Image (cartoon, rainbow, N blue to C red; front, side, top):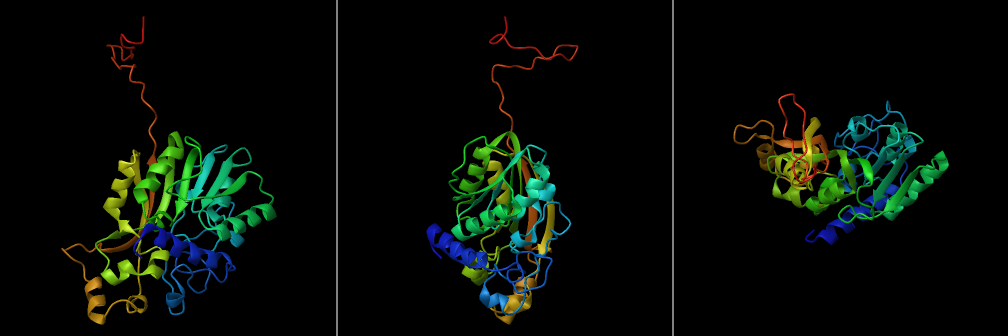
Length: 307
């Protein structure tokens, strides 16, 4: 994979194939609490051993098993502080799993929009919403790097194991900032790295679609969020994702596997991690308002805005 468009096409084709599967057929590597072969890590891996990225949706209000294709690595809606009446956008919405959980939080007065670049996923999500009779959940075809959504639209943005698949993550976070209302926030679950992946793992297309080799270093990921303008950046949850030796041996020699397992630079935290990150779009500041603060602690206007 050399270009952004090639990466997107690999992702689109793989997820189109997943969209045709039943939940029982599409569980495993990117998170499910049901047994089954891996899906998003590709057929070569899925035939041998699952990668445990298990997350538990079963206890969440609004969970629809038919919409869960096992593609997540966290529970962003659980941490997203969604309120009744909120407008929520789910980036990389798949078959609608997180959208339906978000709908249970925002209620009938709210609105939920799922965005996905795979037509087969959009079709499946729309069918799920129609079957469920949901009229305030919609699914839109589009690219996260160039969202066909209005600015200042969303109170909350969620996303689950998708940003790592986007070639231009800086543009994706900038677009997320654009569509959020001032004061709005996101809660995004994703895969990040601590320490470098071996080259064969980093380049492999199947692992890219499987949410691993497309991942950024954790510190660099958080810096991208800050560069997009977000504040109050918090890692809400973090846990390690283990790649079994049965997976690693498809890409590395025994000596290379041993080297990968060995912490470097005295850092035992080297590896692959699932994180859920929260960040806010700040409220605008009126430059004509000056906080003077008198002795009673009362703020006054500056000379440019008051008589």
